[in-house]
Image 1 (cartoon, helix red, strand yellow):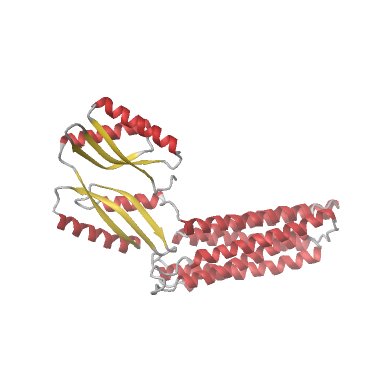
Image 2 (cartoon, helix red, strand yellow):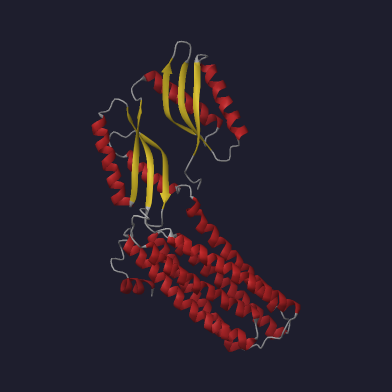
Length: 392
């Protein structure tokens, strides 16, 4: 069914790097989500009213919130696909995040409302009208949600969409919620023990947590995220594969929406290279990354020493000292300047974000101490930095 829908509604379905194709996937997922969740809402609300079950009605409104999420997502996807203009030169891609943030607040409001009504049901329990045929309909709704989970997960992985993967996870949670609701109805119907209000509270808590998680995931790209390690490796390996590039560092990526990214990186080149040739290489890398990864890249050249044996030996010495002290730390932009009384070893030191100011000073002191043991004339001039790369 998933592949049939994709084949019918998405032109050039394999060109997932194309923003228009990616938008088409998002629109398809939104429309399917709206239709499926409105259908489930109607069935569950009717069953909840007939059976006088607040937990089933809570589950129904959970599906309604999912439909509302799909509607806002649809609007967000359409707004995000608008081209850049003079007021918004980076495009409108972040509209999708803003839409998801609105959805999260709607879900949180709904969850709190359901929690209050369920708690009242605990204080004033009512009998549930148990009907086996209605339970069958709830089981069928589980099958629909299972399909929605697989549908969103398949499309999410295909276009690398965190939003779709989150929707798939939400559908998986809905399967669990409906299963709990069925258990509540069966227990109440067979034993006369009313656990409906308690199950409603559980469902409402799940809805609140879903809203919170969506808000958290949406705020992260708006605030600014660390570079994904897999993407970091892909970009650095690509940059360093070109002739004349001996290393890279300080990769920073700015996200202006799922399909619009800009990045900067420092590319290390030999200090004796022909700089016109190096500039031509840099331009070619920038064009290739835009074409292959759809990332607008700006590359800064850093000339480094590759021939002076003494400089290379001291650089290796610094790397070994730092590696022994903390394998998570690293250096770049190493230079050596000879003075009348001192030999300056100049470099940038990248330390983990977990370091406090006290940790940083202690680390620097240990480095300076060990370097001075090697040669008392050595003077370390160190610039501290934090990595822009995600730990995982």
